[in-house]
Length: 239
Figure 1: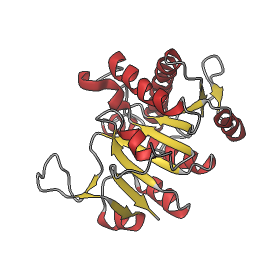
Figure 2: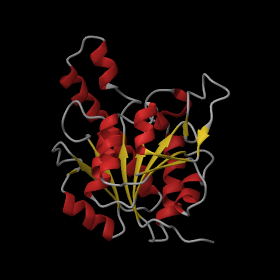
Figure 3: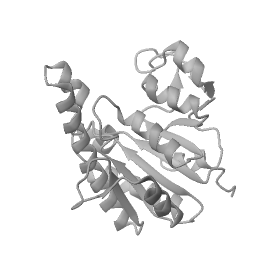
C-alpha cells in the first residue's frame, strides 16, 4: 500500500457534517464514524493532523446578522458553537484512543488551551491531533479563513476541505445535473470564475502562500485516506 504523500495536514470540517441527517446539533453516530476514520489515518504516526471545525450545525453568525442581529455579536456566538463541536470531536477521538488537544482563539482555560502556534506545532510533532476552535477570535472572519490561516501558521503540506460534494464543479451540481467536476484547478481560476469553494480571503491566503487545497467528500469512508495517498479524489486546487 502506498505511503502518504503529505506529512502535516490541516483538515477543515463543516459543522453541518456533524449534524448528519438530523440537520441540527451533533449526531453521535456521525461524529463516531468520523473519529474512526481519523483514527485509522493517525495511528500509523505518519501523519500530523490538525483540524478546524465550523459551527453551522449550531449557529451561523452570517445568517443571524442578515436577520438584524449585530454582526460582531453573531460571529462571537458562532465562535462558541465551534468550541462545542471541537470538544465533542475531541471526546469521540479519545474514545478511539487518539490523543488530542483543543486550542481556542478565545481564552477559556477550563475547557481548552489558548491557541499558541509553537505549542500547536509541538503537539503535532508528538503525534497529537490538534483541533482549532473559536475561529481567529475576531468577528468578520469565516472558519474557512481560519483554516487557511492555521494551515499557513503550522506549515501544513496540504489544506483538505471536506464538503457535502465530491469536489469543485463549474456550477451547482444540486441544481444543474450537467455540472462538470474539475479534477484540478488553479486558485486564480477559482477566483475569476467566482466558484463557491471558500470565501475570497481564504482563497487568496492559500494562493499567496502556495498552499495546495483538496476539496473532497468524506463519503464513502476511506476517501480522506485515499486523498492522502495521492489518489485522484475530489478536486486539487493549486497555485
